[in-house]
Image (cartoon, rainbow, N blue to C red; front, side, top):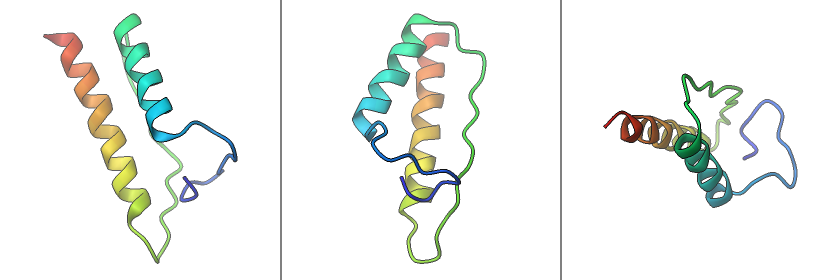
Length: 67
């Protein structure tokens, strides 16, 4: 995602990252998450939307562990 402070070429795509994070929550006791380095651009809201969706997913994974 280019709208970050330090974009990394060749990094995980959305589905790889979500599968990885879901596995982490399923197999480990997660006590916190830190989502940082969003650097929105003035010509698109895609990065903000993607970050919000990621935070929503993380909260859902955490909530599912509590029930």
